[in-house]
Length: 176
Image (tube, rainbow, N blue to C red; front, top):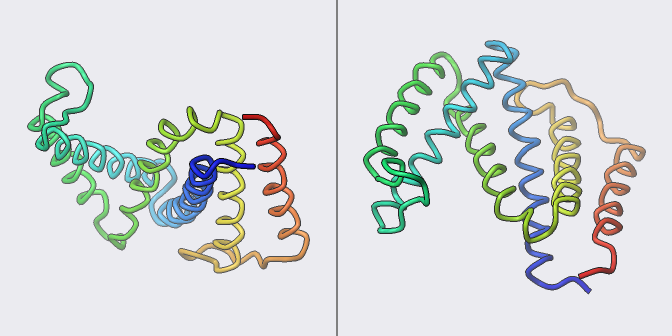
């Protein structure tokens, strides 16, 4: 029987995988408009701005990041957030602003890896993440999300996603 904490962690890993599929769809749209390297740049800027803002706010609350000086100071993270934010705004010119959220999905994924992989184990975390990615990918394909090509859900595709979910259970096994 899965412990409640592990079940919750698996659910979060699945959700992160779903978010990764949304991010992939969004970045594909930006890549069609600007190029793949430009899409990566935009995503990285949003990720850096998001983590710098998070660290800056945390430092202001008296819980600075456990980084060497001066990276443990709120002001340095404010500068980083502003610089990345300005570069992101310039990069986003001519694009719908919601595409900037793609980088925040990346931030959630990176933080999730650091928080959940040690709890679940690498194999279980990755299997849940990939299962979430596939379920999200099937959904994005079905919708033709963000201007992508529509690939209809079929019984075979659903069976493949089901097989991955069964794989998560098998990777979990009966241990701890």
